[in-house]
Length: 284
Ligand SMILES: CC(C)(COP(=O)(O)OP(=O)(O)OC[C@H]1O[C@@H](n2cnc3c(N)ncnc32)[C@H](O)[C@@H]1OP(=O)(O)O)[C@@H](O)C(=O)NCCC(=O)NCCS
Image (cartoon, rainbow, N blue to C red; front, top):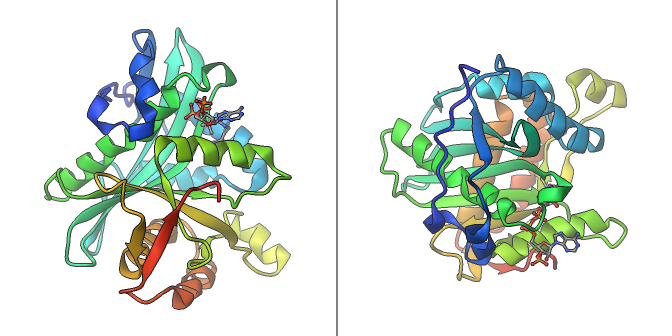
C-alpha cells in the first residue's frame, strides 16, 4: 500500500456546473486512492475492473501501456510538453465503488501554457450511479492538471481543458447514449463532428494489428469542458488541433509510430486555425 496516496480533495469549485448533485453525496466513508505505481496491489483491482468493462471492445490500452504511463510519475517531460498519468480507485469498507484514469498534458505549443486532460476511462459500480459520485470523478482530474502544471514550472491557474473521446450516438447502443447524457448534463460540449472527424489510434497489441493487416483507428467525438469557458458555443480550429495533438503525443508514447501515422494523417483534414467550429450537445 506504500504507493497509494489519499491526498485527493473534494473541491466544490472544481465541479462542473451540472454536477451540483455531487455536493449532497455522503463521502465520509469513501476511500479515494491514487495509485502510484503498477507495483501497488490495488493496481490489479483498478486495471482489472477497467479491462473487464472496456477491454473486449478494444477501448482499453494493454496493461503494459498503462504500466509505462504510471512509471512517468511525477511527470514525463517530452520536449516542451509534460505528461502526468493517474489512476484513482474509490472504495468503501474495502469494496469496489468506482475507478478512473486520466492523463494531464501540459503544452505551450500555441504560445500560451495550458493543460489538456484526457479523460480515459471511468467506471462507477451500478449501485453508485446517479448518486453524484460521477461528478466528483469528472472534477478530480483538475487536481492532476494543476499538479502537472506545477511540476512543469507553470502556474496552476493556467487554463485547463478536460477532453473525453466518446462514441457517436447510435440507437443500437443505449449505453453510449447514457454516457453522452451524463456528460451533457454535467455541462460538457462536443466539437461539431460535421466539422472535425477525430480518430483514436488502434489499441490492440502490435501483433494483433499486424495479423489483421493494418491498424484500425476508431472514429470518436471530442467532448470537452473548457474550465471557466463552459458557456462558449464555438471553438477555433487552432484550439481543436492543439487538443488533438496533445492526445496523439500521449498515445505516441505507448503505440508504434507506424500505427500513429494513420491517425496523424487525419489532422490534415481538420479546419484551418481561424475557423470557428460549433460546440454542440454531446448527444447530438
Ligand atoms: C457513464 C457512467 C460513469 C455515468 O455514471 P452516473 O453515476 O450514472 O453519471 P451521472 O450521475 O453523472 O449521470 C447523470 C445523467 O446521465 C443520465 N443517465 C445516467 N444513467 C442513466 C440511465 N440508466 N438511463 C438513462 N439516463 C441515465 C441521466 O441523464 C442522468 O441524470 P439524472 O440521474 O439526473 O437523470 C456510468 O454509467 C458507468 O460507469 N457506465 C459504465 C462505463 C462507462 O460507460 N463509462 C464511460 C465511458 S469511459
